Length: 405
Picture 1 (spheres, rainbow, N blue to C red):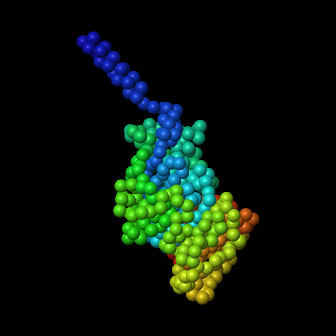
Picture 2: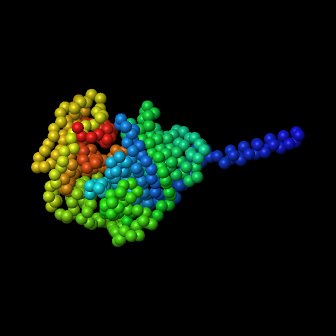
Picture 3: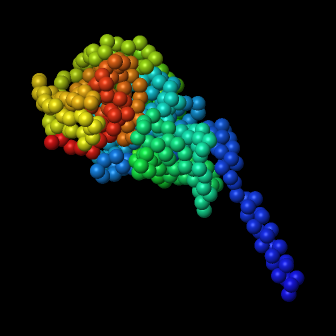
């Protein structure tokens, strides 16, 4: 009897030792993550991002494609309004596309190397490996890291990242503020390493026209599909072809910021941050006839920095154009301009990409800075000489789900 008990005890001890040997600590997982990123050729992920920045949560479908060396395609679809915007990077530069409105902005930028997003795998792994004070937990099917958030805004402080134990694919991300309130939550429905994309998957023109070809479907249908879905797409320019041409969704030259040709309508182009800029704010009309811009009311932000109040608002209606100008004063002084842009090519001062969560915005100017973005067919501009960038982002975010009054 004693011998049986002793043998049972030995079995239990050996089982415990084997189980312990199978577990990985934070250092072992971090080592594996560095190897995964180093060997990674491509990936494709999809899920839902929720922003908890307003009175009610805002939900966005997000799809991310990446292929070495530096091709990216991010499609963000407003689940409520069914409007998709695409951030694209290929050999031509970085683009912000709104296919449903036939609008595009172009940059010469090293994004996302200088500013990552919460749904980019490299950004998440960089946050884990770069935080020496990281906290680690081993759950049933996930490794969980609690690390510092690094998203170029003081509002986001910490983040928890869930990785699948089997292949280190991301499962969920929660980004919190200084009060431990979750501000951004991303839940991945799928994530695949080694995704196979078609030759035109990262082509600007293909992504601009794909929405129309697919009946303006959003999310995973909003752009060029992986290789197995592009067999019937016809001949398209590859992502390596400079200045893909076309009359629909044409993009302006990233160096001059001026459209190439009178038929390139519906395009918003900004000069690249590394290219030569045109005169700030100058415009060169296309041959298109002006379209009537209906009223959308006055869209006011729900957030204002402490010590700031609305001074006045003006509705401007000239030659069929409808626009709104809001002026704020106090601790900071700034204006907000709202309009439905006409078909035109625009040359702006050098600008850079900034993450607004629900879309990508553009910051231009030096002493006088302007944040520009589009949402639901309306173009917004916040201009100020003293308003910090992080406050601009908070104001822009608070306007996302507001309707005109």
